[in-house]
Length: 340
View 1 (cartoon, one colour):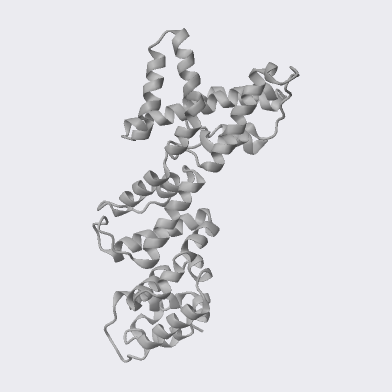
View 2 (cartoon, one colour):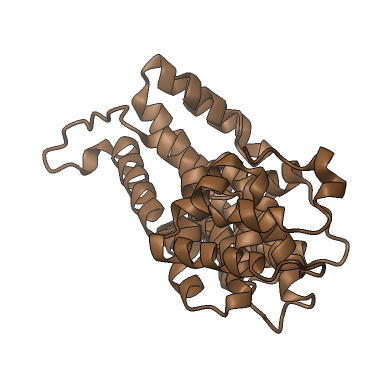
């Protein structure tokens, strides 16, 4: 009950909050019929408002819906009602095309719509019996599917995320990042955002649309992954795991960069098979075998810096010896992490 009330308070559209609050009061008082009717009304109003926002942003699939709404608003009541009834019949189809809902959420909302019709028109049952609705899940499903979310589309939220990270003025702010691209987007879009971050962070892919160096963009994405992991470690683990097959066959330089960039991220090691772990340990050994040496690459330095993590010293035993061979280690002895 407390969780449901908290979600009611998170309704995205402030104009709809009084309507949802009324539906919630019906719910807690046991008035299922009122709660269902009000919930479906709120869903319709919410999807229409979000379609109008997307239309203003240039989304072509919202054009017809917005035109129908404007036509109804400019018509007499006798003409407006049939227009809105027709719009209501196709509203969920349009919402799915706009990526405001996915297939599963559409099915949930279809049930709310059907139950609303049974509540509002009890005489449609074969023998005219009064339909008695239950309090199963309607309000909770509507809140989770649409009402608490902004008008974010799967492909557009990912595009927006990529533009944010690639921007020359990018500033890493974990609170803004997680609020905008994780907490306030629907689960399906959230997964796409995390997968995009994992792909670039692990593989440092060169994309013509990305106007900064792949390594720099990958470093930024690694920071994003850490923020997302703080919200949902399992989601990040799954996203990183999807990139492991490609990492196995990637160029050696890419593999070493991935190690230095993500080596301290638990999701990285949880997704890494033994063969790749052994390969990375061998790479560390190779760096150490060049001793005595003074010049190392940035990627090599980041990889050797992982010696600061006790769990990685166990996973990559070559780290300790390779790190100890750095010529400047004695000078930095007071800052060197314990390797005992």
